[in-house]
Length: 343
Image (cartoon, rainbow, N blue to C red):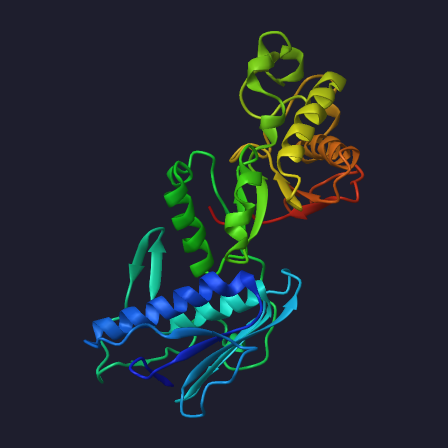
């Protein structure tokens, strides 16, 4: 197990990559906090441009290096020596993951947005052990060649209290990055506004979630009840809708185009059935010929057509358990989610 001496005059060398600046600043700030906890008055590590003049050989450095690959390549590695720490990422996203993996190895935790926990004071003054990876941190990411980790998404419910103010949103985005999420899924109505803030941490901004029903506004029930789900011979306003009705699909496509325009800077949209009711669909005479999974495919296919008609090159995810799906063909801009992300 390696040690990290926070009392040394570390300099953090940054690549020409704006997507990692916030994470690098976090690293400097956290090391500064550990110095303060150890009773030292020295300032946090300085940030320096890696393309500029090299520090003297006597100066210990934390070298950040990114291959600048696509965000989907989120692999990273790091290794630590007495005078040099190297953190490598396949992309901006991977490098940010590597930075926060290193800070986690120092014992720093972020259990919830806006809350930060430092490790106990070191046994030796200012010398903190770097923990070996545990079950949640595969050993292949520790001092070895990078390998791609599973893409980790965090879905933000539209009722999440951290969306209510700019400060809380910033805390939520920072928390997700520090816990090595790769993408934040914002509510459909607001996602386009937050992509810039997420990008400051090299997080991908995506839109949607369990929001497929938003494409048929519930206010239409009074005059268009035929578009809504039938159960026991009666139309129901709640939960999903009737996807075989041509009027439903016309409304769905019209509403979908509005959301796609609002999120035109996004590449991924998620449209899943109402949470906990993925199999609760319509039982009208037309829909009875289709399974719940097939009805879901009919609905998301209409949304996929709307995305293509809008001229966007993005993709839509839909939820479907393994072995389901039936014979409804899929559009080329759809991809399946078999397991739901964290919320």
